[in-house]
Image (tube, rainbow, N blue to C red; front, side):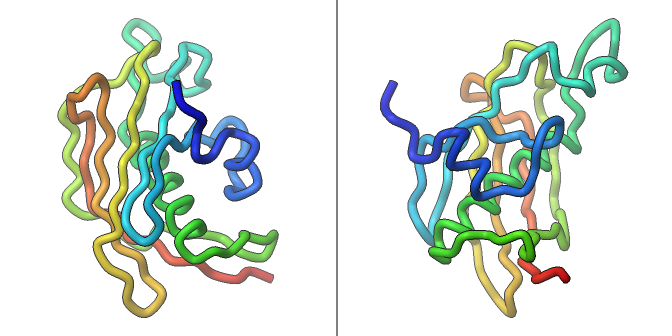
Length: 150
């Protein structure tokens, strides 16, 4: 396997998320101002599997969307050439057209892809897709913005 574009150590410097909500393990491709491809290794140790669902563990759709949003945030930070500080947060401002097409289970590797669709007034709009073994698990349009916090 080739060297990651961003390994977990670099991801931890870019995103404020930590366990159990950090959902990006590695970035394998990144084209500034265009697209990102990242990975999330799904394991039975994820805390949400205790309740979703104990007899048949399935990754919640909202967690897949969060993983896509984190990937999109990484693309934005890299594209802007900025380092996030303790005073900068990336917020969701919208999700459109979310469609869930395949369950994601422990042992799966979720491939997270985001493409910048447009940037207007500080709002980034992305087309996103998460897949397992080439099969789409979820696709959606996400909108995010960066804000300074006190």
